[in-house]
Image (cartoon, rainbow over all chains, first blue to last red; front, side, top):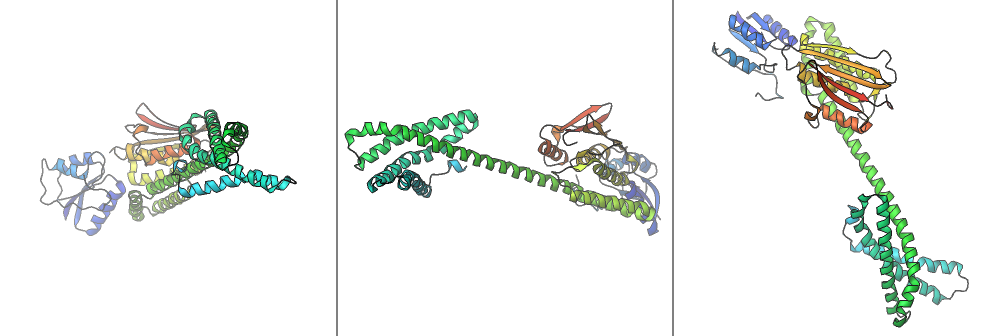
Length: 90
Length: 352
């Protein structure tokens, strides 16, 4: 089982992803958070193996959150995946 | 502008024909009424009438439209004075030219020129003023009708634009996808709520499509749509969006432009709730004050200025619609007090 953490400011989207991952049977959800600032603390305390980050979030975008985390920890693989096409990443 | 276009040859020819016909009117009158008038007199009348009609009418047709742009904006009194003076000058000038033309045609001898000219002067001025002022009055009416038509057309265009913009923002891909995602996420865990959300969405789309942005809708209808919209957005934003909607106990007869309040709430969500990770609160208060409809949409966001409204977007659009519907009798204001930003919309009593 892959230790997985989910960050999404929209609770419904977060729950949905959690359900999908659980159904896959390969991921262990070690944490989920809808507040990107709080998420930074939680992830630092117990770094997961797999991290799902929403991009458009208040105060901290997914990319900013990742940059913040990588000050202390480095992930072996980053694979941006998105379902949004209407706004370019900034 | 039609009045300043080049005086083309075709216009010139038409003008000569029209002038000549006008000049022949006295002759026709003589033929019909003057029993025993000799053919020579009738013919002479036609020639005289035609000569004067053209010697006055052609310069007038040329000069008056060119004079107009300079005087049109100085008010009706000055306009009429200027036209009258111009017509008198043209009549005197035309009288001299016409008399000379008649002398040249051999209708009388040159030494009598000044006497004939003076005899003709009064009738020239009289007819020129009478016809000139009538034509001017018609032209004024025509131009006013044209202007009104242009303004009406502009209003219709603006309304269509507003309708399109409102549709666009309602069926904005983001909003649509967000809502569909919310609904699909709810189906396994709370199918009843998913169903309700779907109905809200359908009602909102229906209302958007039906809304004529130049008309007015009852307050209850707008408030229902506002609640639907807030419920949809709350499903997405969760506990970050807190709201309260208060409407008057007796909303009968209160009307407002469709989606006016919804636009304000959309702004609040976009700029006050969504960018804050702890979310915020929106309060809607609609009430009747002195027979007028007052609506306040307050949020806990950072506040903004109406001047910063982007052209073509919700708030700018709303402002244009209000101006179109009520002139300057409707009021839209933004105030900030105790960490609350309030947009106050006050509609005139005549429609409320």
